[in-house]
Image (cartoon, rainbow, N blue to C red):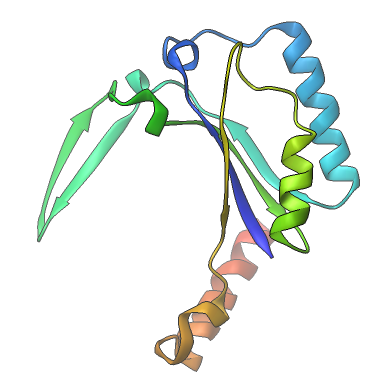
Amino acid sequence: MRVMVIVKADKDSEAGVMPSEQLLTEMGKYNEELVNAGIMLAGEGLHPTSKGKRVHFSGKNRSVVDGPFTETKELVAGFWLWQVRSMEEAIEWVKRCPNPQMGDSDIEIRPVFEMDDFGAEFTPELRAQEERLRDAITTK
């Protein structure tokens, strides 16, 4: 089972406050544990939304909105992509994580859709295309 582990933003991350050397060291050690356990597939921190853009879709129209974005509690400061046996295993790993923020913080865990989740609508042709794309990504 793959899960995306989402570190929620706070006022400091949105203000561009960089983590301390101590937090960077703790996170580096934690990431090393994840990699050594074969769990971590990817993980990155994100710049604040003041450096971001949103593209709004309305029918065939597209419009671009410049950051920063409001509602800090709904924003993402960073993420991991993990391969775990179960949601319970993901929860146990998140509980071991150093607190990513200076104060209270939240980390969200969301299952990633797998091909079988899409049912009959995901035809053999679409499955083959998806497999080709994943193979192309891993060979780059």
